[in-house]
Length: 115
Image 1 (cartoon, rainbow, N blue to C red):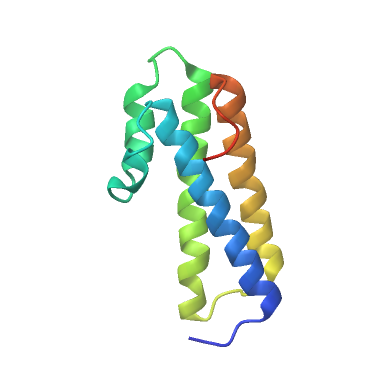
Image 2: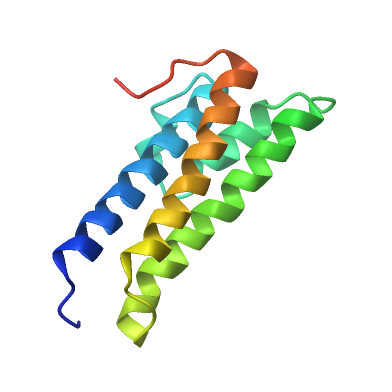
């Protein structure tokens, strides 16, 4: 792996924490935060299963969350293939992850952060 700057490592850390917090919010939709650590993707599946069929606004944010989680994983994996390593990329993804989390929290009245 290439050597990364301190700024890039910090941005990756922020992105990782934001992704985990988003997964916690998704798991909370299903009232099963334990699903968060059960297996990769479990929180997203639990949120989709728990979302009422007519709750289009919630489903929109769940689907958006799925997209942003994939983007965060892809950006991190791309480093090993010589992809972008500038902090701005990871900070932009972090911003979108947080926007999804905030929307889910607001829509469902969830706790704003993980314990």
